[in-house]
Length: 535
Ligand code: ADP
Image (cartoon, rainbow, N blue to C red; front, side):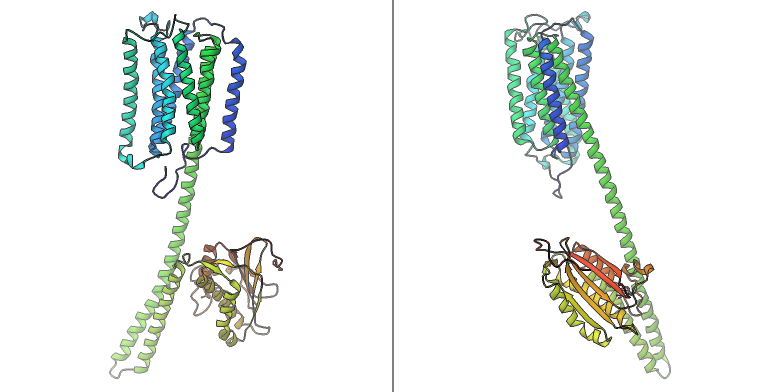
């Protein structure tokens, strides 16, 4: 039942029934019991010969049961479950046996000389009655021990064809044997009334149905199991009407009512199975569609990223080639121009570093950070970053302040990656603030616990802020307004935060400057904090 990736396929025979399915099944059962009670008083009334009705009934049963078998075979083709295969054999066998049952029914085709003898119809009915619950029991016994290896992909069609042929052959062979037999058990005293021996058949059938019900109840898991239980309940009701309440006489009201309730319920089960299959198919189609969309958008993102990477790397490479050629030319002169050649080589080195930085940035972006996830104290991570960037801040005459929530819970994540995120945001804030004149240069980093169990980190600066038109672009790869900027920092930071289950976004400050905020789910949240976000 489980595929190679460990997924259970979404099939009727694998998914458990939901509440509305259980409710519907309950209603079907209740309606059947009510119908039984209503019909019971009239069930001994005998009706006239109704040959066309009997044939129509037989045709309907054949149609419903063969269709159910086909539906189960298609389930088998996907799920490769032996249990479902056996169940479909049960339906097919029962459906096919209706043909000889109707054809041998006394009075139906007698006019055509097709009189098979008094006992044949009852013998076929007995085999049909008793075999179906045996197939259901085999289904129930097999259903938890699937062996996928038994059904190699190529042989599915063969298995289905072989089963259909086998069951058809069995039904035909059995019919022939019954019709040819000289001595059959005496089930009928005349064309309409049953003999005492017959009473063992419904009793045995009810016994088998009840055993089937108990086994299915104990091993119930799937929607299919639920509806099979309803089928068995219906069969119990049907046989009660046919054999007991109707006095065992053929073509009485009870006899007909039992047959018709059985048929109605079997068709209902078939309809439910069909509609469930259609629903599952629609769900599958939707999920394939959304998966395709996600793949396409992933591909677009990858294409955009690789185009930017190609662009970013080809630029320094082209510049390196130009400068290296220039260097060669300076050295090729009659009197080599060492100073110029040196300058050209320095540019080569600079561009080489730039290309390496691009590659490093990409490697950092795709480095797997999930394996080394531990509990992270964001406050101490921030203090660490601030300690390291102190020189830079001092150099830009930027004052870096922190307001860290002392009761901040731990986060779960990669300390290295989260440190890089903070360091990117602080470096950007310091860069932006260093250019400010005429107002204090301040970078403030704040941590808070939000009511929504998230840690919020804000990096606020008094820099020039970010124009509305750039607010989305700054997160694109290689977008930078700095002469030596790589434009990878924010993209990397956002992807790290998102991979940790958080969000990163930018806001304007009330006065001037930008606030970058990101959230992270906390690992040991136990309740609301009294240090909710004050802003
Ligand atoms: P880089 O820092 O290499 O340019 P980033 O992805 O970190 O790459 O940033 C992209 C761009 O976003 C920067 O070039 C800058 O224009 C803008 N930016 C980032 N942080 C700030 C900030 N705090 N204030 C103003 N602009 C910012």
